[in-house]
Length: 297
Image (cartoon, rainbow, N blue to C red; front, top):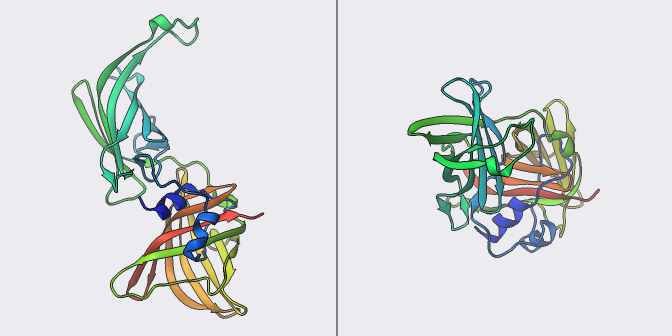
């Protein structure tokens, strides 16, 4: 994982709504604005799969996933042969297919069956037993970045499913606010020219506000004395992560022209800021990098 990937993936966001515009930072500013980054990183699933996952067509069935460092803990909520609810745990799952030595899109491990004393009586640790029941594997889908492919075996019976993040709330209200941040797109296709949306500014302050018509957010920032950029995008929530899709306009204040389409996926949002991988398309060129900001209010 590159230094920039570590920085931008760790700095979650603050003030949210939905829909986003961004600003591009000169490379030297990134470490200071987006927190210090270690040169080494633990092997882990990316994006973070922490949350509840389910198949909307199978009510009452579910998967809970929690990632801490290089370990993933999963719990399956299913029904047994007698149609009674039961659960299995995988307490030591690890990334299976590493990308670049530190990031992975999957993890696997042993499923365990646990038994213990009744919840309504006194707890006797001697009655707790744990035994291996099978194996479990989870991997981000190659066709849908917001779903997991689940495969598990219990007592010799194999099951495969596609599961989706369970979403019951949104981080959209957190985005509105003031940020120091940027849109950094160092990678581009073919012979496309590099892009920079900050002009001569040494630091960029972005302002994000609600755009009710888009059910998203609007970001504005200056790039010079009479120029600036505007990003208007719709916001959607997928479990703990968000996504932004919209149009980026840059140019003279009061009359910017359409510059490109921008998409930010796996967007982390918190009271401190926001960050996520970004893809911009302009003409026949595709640019990739990161979008993020640290709250200044």
